[in-house]
Image (cartoon, rainbow, N blue to C red; front, top):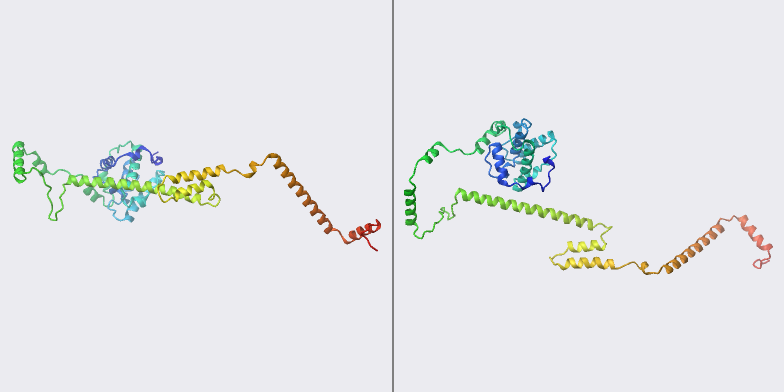
Length: 337
């Protein structure tokens, strides 16, 4: 199921132009940017196209301009996900900001899901009629409707104009006004150049691509910074912070300059620790055995002395008098009369 696809799936390599073409053809819209769908209304109607009648379109707001209005649309979308048991997480706080990369990734997932459900076909879905039930749906139909050529424009386009005569007039006029043959861009009253609609569209597309590139680089930077921070937290654990390997890692983490010698120094710290071996490993086995025997004898002497002291303390006064009489009867020189 599309809800379980990973970030390296082919769905996330679909271009912006293909996504926009799919949205406009499915819902009869005329979006020029993916981030124009950040209100969540387009997502709701895409789910309505994939599952007709599943989305309460009267709760969808195509005229949402504030974040709290957009959040209501995403709540409707989340309810539909829950009904269909879709486990895809909706990052509402990022989508409502209108960032191109976040909206593009979520729309790529939407396309993959809709293709997996209906195979890319809408089965006669009437997008305009369904959108009229939404708040601001009729205005959206007028706003996003594809421009149709008017009757006057069509009639004017059918008129025949002599190409040769027209070309000669243009050539003569341009040569008379600009003898050098160079074309100059007209400028406004403020001295700024005036761009045509085609040039404006090209510039806007270039700006959008640059924004996508910046967002991608920022996301990659944040990902690797979080990894380095996790490594630093683990290295600060009291149980392992004094290990040579951890010291070498921290040496690399806290290096202030991009010097290749830092890695060499860290490797040297680890190799030096590996060369140092415990002193007991260099002692012969016979000396270790003798040392063990001496320690065992010392332990026995200490235990016997402790037993004698304990026995003398626990003797009763009658036993002590009996012991003294035994010494007196034996004629010991220690007893004086």
